[in-house]
Amino acid sequence: MIDHVRLNRYNFLIAESNSWDRRQLASMLRAAGAMNIQHAGDGSEALEAVAQQVPDIAIIGEKLAFLSGRELVSAIRDHESKPINHMPILFIVSKISRKGMTELARLGVHEVLCKPFSTKTLIDRIYWTLMVPRPFIRIRGYFGPEPRGKFWKHVVGISTRGDTSPDFLEDRAVGGPVPVHETDVIEL
Image 1: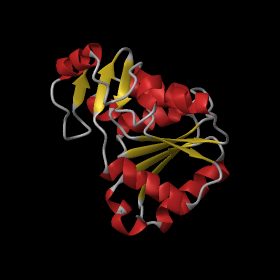
Image 2 (image 1 turned 60 degrees about the vertical axis):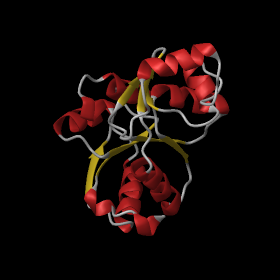
Image 3 (image 1 turned 135 degrees about the vertical axis):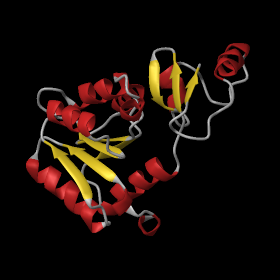
Image 4 (image 1 turned 180 degrees about the vertical axis):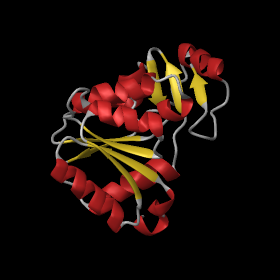
């Protein structure tokens, strides 16, 4: 996957409290060709950076000062500006459970990376996030990228995307056709 992504075309934001981790992430991105990398050491600094220049993708650590990583994701998804609230987010954790994955999916995170991970894993996740975009949806208190597979049930309270129950079909009909671009929003 790394060969198919030209990271020099994209702007990145790394929001991570640990300076060593920030440097490691930047080094991984640079090794894959990224040149435009912003750094933020805490959540409020990251939010300011996003307001000044919306990155193509944000890589957010869970343990940030002032605004935690989860609070930062919520602030981004709740933002009134479309480029900001539609920004792809990779979330980095040191450990994760099924419950934690569900919580992060409910916040509207695109991908979750659990430390330690390789440069290839990071770039693969970036590839899938940028090159295979998912439409954004707004349904039952959720706003974010359309959940994949089993997370539909846990995120939006619907058993599967293939559900043919009348309620589900009625909900889908309200939103109209599935959009082609991630920047479109399906209102369900």
